Image 1: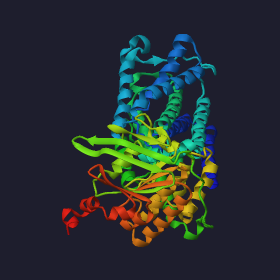
Image 2: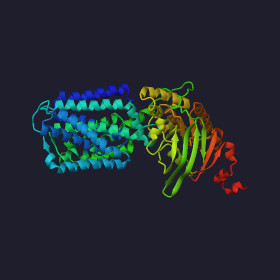
Image 3: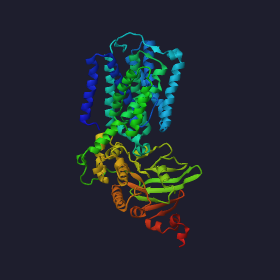
Image 4: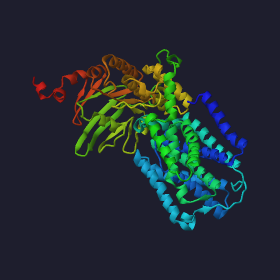
Length: 584
């Protein structure tokens, strides 16, 4: 993900910037470099949540303020060293993130953003009015007692070194994260939560873990600010302006990347200092105009940030022959993760689901045996996709039960748990992780059974060759044809090593040649021992593939039998062609 040349040049640039204050001996320039490192670290900490996990927070100042106040209050009231107060503040911020934000992870988009802002505002008001502890708007002033144990220094250089260490820690963690199981999962969550759940990702747990880590680092930044400025008050450390700034650096540079927040910080912090020095106090407001202009220009010209725009430009200039293709003989896939002893793998009994006054599924029964290919057909709006969502627990039923591999799933079993049990699915509207490569799409799914990333990538290559996408592995999913996107989604389902796959219209929108290829591929999948239940409107595909067909209309099962029995059933003909066709 990060090539050696980029690492070398990045390291050289960071070394030059670090050495410059020592060589120049200019306090103003030293302060700018400290600010760059400090904001770079905060922006990287925000990027863990806002970039990788896709949870756009404008309330990260909550953790910043908690870190600043915790270390300062412990030092002033109990004489605890700020070094220990920094750790205490980080842990307290992580606990706050766990308790407050975990319930908020069900919120999407700007609703989550508003919840994060609300938390920061509540803490600010609390700090303002809890005067006995915080002195309210007067703020807290640290005594001038320079000493290492007090985290107070006469020179700026120790602060520079600490800010650098904090930045390096965030860089190292981000690099590790990008290659880890958690990193793959977070990128999948940021792309599409439902698709991530379908490949076994525990979305809430992943979000909670990364939010706690982000909160810890942000709180450490709050302690650093308190020690560097030697003064804090609620309006500063709980300021929404700070949250906007660190988010803005990442957005302009490119969220979800390592270089993006760094580039945004390294460009905008010096620009801000220059603007303030050039414009002075009389025209200080023009700095916000410049910031706004830069943000508008980036959003219009580079909507994914500077780094991703440069990566896209480099990819276009790269000769097609440079990309190494994963060609080779057709391979097999690993056997299913589970081998149920009983012939019956899935049983649906009395399943019902209503949306308002609409009965989407009405007292539905279905039994599927291991190794079968069962087709589910019916007119548009009959309830087929709703049935799949109920079976895979994306939707909870009003009545009825679903038993998979001898275990009744119930209301408490989540989609990711169903995937762990051995049930995978595709979606009616194809949902690959669009901004990830084909290989990363399938690697994310392979991590369910192979927690080590390098082993998961090897398994992903095997699955990609099996579905015929070995030569497409480095391409982003967004650049693929519809047929290949469907293959990616099928490969992702296979990569979880399921016992049963629910296939929702995997042939919709394909031409006859592509349909024939998918039919052949599904036969090969079935030969590996995977049970298939497919919704399909392409009748020749359903008839040629299915051992048994179930027909659904208005949420109820109206027929079940072999393909020959189904094509001759009057109720099926009536459902598709109308009563006139039955009597014709």
